[in-house]
Image (cartoon, rainbow, N blue to C red; front, side):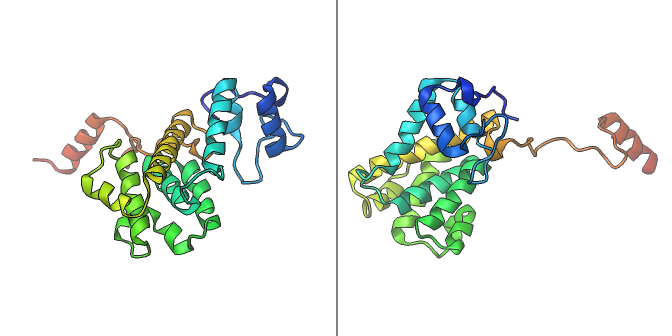
Length: 216
């Protein structure tokens, strides 16, 4: 379950209620979760806790889908997908893998996202975009001049600004999804202590067993 509360259909503010109807039909998404996209849908019900946060983030979705954008949907989705993988968000990565295919990328390219730097299925523009995405997400914006110069060979200033804004926004969404355990990011941390072969967690027990098995 998400770490925060959720807003049901009857308590949703007007815009959230309209989105609920579009995504969930007549169902209350808290009582009967699930979207046609295969997600639980709790990103929406948690964000509805703060109506203007819900509206603000929804406006961000409208921004990047606007016909006014100069940035191509292909490059936009490439950045969003790599950002999801780099942050470690199963939700953002999974959703945008599908969006990459819709934008015309091949299955080979989708599978190559985790290892893009050693894959030969990318155009020079796509490689520049992927390198810049890693600078934005993994290096927190620190971008080498060589990466930026390569980007400018293929994108205008306006396209670079749009790409930077959208990709950084999705890095934020991926981070929040993990922190709040939303959607496919509602998973336990895989990095946990494991017991020894006897089911023990005590270091002293392990040391005692080692002394018994290997006497001086």
